Amino acid sequence: MNKSQTKRPDTEPDSEAETKNTTTEEPTVEALVEAVAEDVQESKTEGEELATQESTVEEATAEDVSAPGEEELETDETSEKRDPEAEIIDLNDKLLRALAETENLRRRARKEREDTANYAVAGFARDLLSVSDNLGRALDTLPETLDETGDLLSGFVEGVRLTEREFANVLERHGIDKVDPMGEKFNPNRHEAMFEIPTDDAAPGTVVQVVEIGYVLKERLLRAAKVGVARSLPELEEGESVDTTT
Image (cartoon, rainbow, N blue to C red; front, side, top):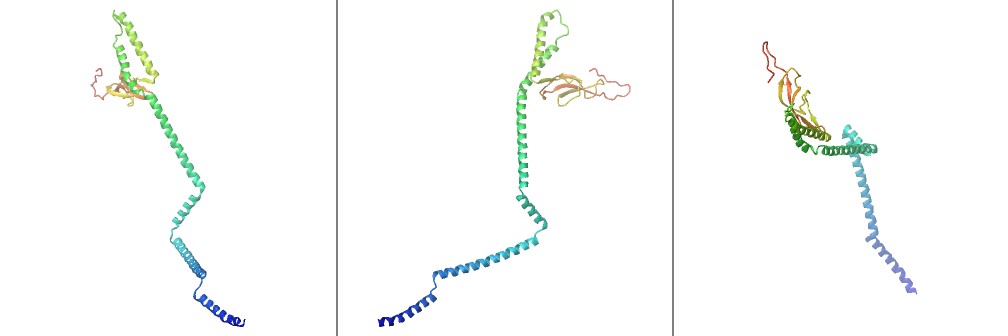
């Protein structure tokens, strides 16, 4: 018992010394981690402070250098971007433009359909005009009074007249009208001047003779009327005269 009691005091101081030496010479991992974290936090804080100072200096420099007009422009652009009423007005304007364009397209398509329906037979109707011309010429060649053979031809002549009249009615029902400009002012859009006639009986530019009747199909010209147009007589010296019988 006495020996063991005397030995314990000798061993305890040695272990405490060794523990102290180990603690001072080899720091623990937790301590190292805490030290590194503290260094990182300090460096981070210093960096944020430097960045804040630099940004403050740059803003102050930019405010001093920037022109007043640019600052107002940026302010206006920012307010426009953030203003919902301006966006609503802009969208409403775009919507109205789109609706107007759609309506114009619809009108053009409807006009094209109407033109196709109204003027699809224009070529066919133009070819039929010669038939009407020939019937008219046949009636114009007949003498005013028939000789003893008139009784035999009267039925035939009456049939031609009825055919010409019915043909004219058919053309009229399909919107094809005659253009007979006798005595009217010359219209280059509907008349074709074949010659001029010097005369004092009509004003210059008046149609005084119709060579061939014209036709229109629902306000569209199928064939221009071929006409002779009056022109003023030339000025003559005393004693001179102009022969207008030719």
